[in-house]
Image 1 (cartoon, rainbow, N blue to C red):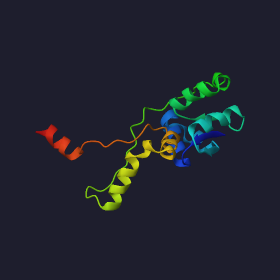
Image 2: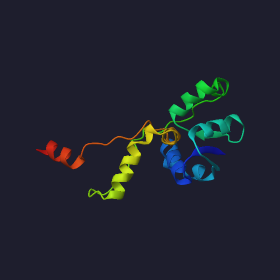
Image 3: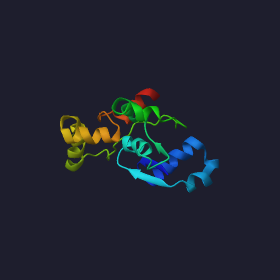
Image 4: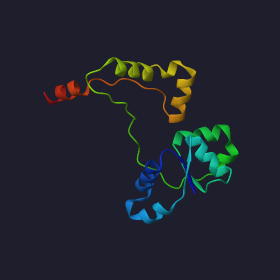
Amino acid sequence: TLAGAGTEDYLRNLLRQMLGAERDNLIDSIKLLAVPKDIDALMAVGFGIAKASIASESSLTKLAVINSAQHAKLKTLAASDKNFFLIAAIAKKKENEEKKLLKTLEDMTSRPEGEKTLKMLGLDGWKRIPDLDSSISKQLR
């Protein structure tokens, strides 16, 4: 049993990235335990609920701080390639609902429940990126 936060497809894709697609038979045979947060996946191993977990390096570091004895019992077996930043995308033409969504995302760090959700996702916050179309066209000139 392998514990991890995310959908089954997401977790199996991470396993393929770490172990290689040639190991599909092994990957498909692994029982997955879905948990709400990365730290819960690590804790599942410590409590004997899972034999292994998939979690971020930052969650492993957090575990070292909150439960050093459990952290000392864990060994990293494999690591995936560095993942790119998550993005939230909307259509170029912003309507009022999209503007409200953008504002909500940007303001998450200013509310306790927003901070909690960001931490659960392993994020520090959201920020706008420059208009990519204009940046690309400037680079091409």
